[in-house]
Length: 334
Image 1 (cartoon, rainbow, N blue to C red):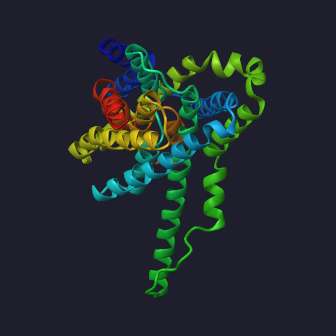
Image 2 (spheres, helix red, strand yellow):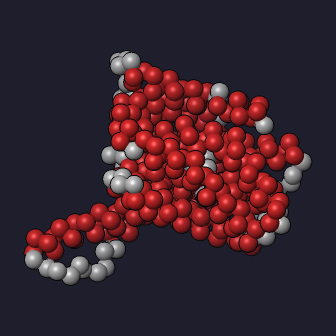
Image 3 (cartoon, rainbow, N blue to C red):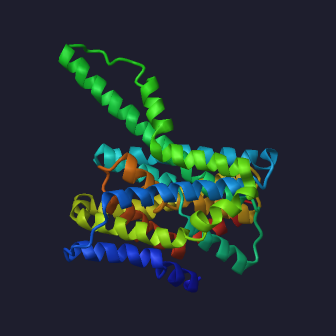
């Protein structure tokens, strides 16, 4: 297990993220043009969606119906819980939404470490869990962006009613425009659209998409994390405002959400390995898909908060403590 921890913490994507933070802290003139920054986000969203859709095409709907429902449930409830906790500690809406999307979505690298753990212990798991990895990245982002639009709309309505002298707060804060922006904003549209295209075409799409969206994925991801490191480093001082509270959340949240994932996995009758991996997915926090979506849809959210917490606290916590805990709980409840 120690080898897995060291291997993941010393991976190029993590080290280039740290390099970006260091460059910002020493006030280097290193900078990414806005057009390139946007292009990197677009690339990652398409690549993630395509790979998930192609993987999902290998299974019948009947065989993955219950796991998909479980994944959608977790992707919907975790952002709501996260947003509620952030409200309690007094975080502003945009940064709270950033954390809701980050913790509701998942970490592919953490899942990979979970799979390696299962292999080391000789534990089998369902093959379609690989498809759920990408499927679970999207719902939380969609729910978080929808929550943002609803709450912003609610705030605007509240201000209007106060100015107009009304006492009652108007109902129906979810209007068509809020739903349209949440469903068809560029981040969700690219992620879900690519997922559907990959699912429709299946493995027949691989020859066309492999050279760009599979072979180069790791290298493009390094550039994206370097850029996110620069942004996070520039806004790092803002994180001091929440300090200990955020640190506690970064260690407690994965355990709570991971146990929720294990319970869901047990409820839908996954194997011990599948149940443990559902816990790994639920307890992880995204530093690829969610940041790529937030970068374009909620640029006001501070990357040093949502990326710093997911990469600096929750990621190593899961590698060292979380994965073995989810596995032991999965064995205990079955």
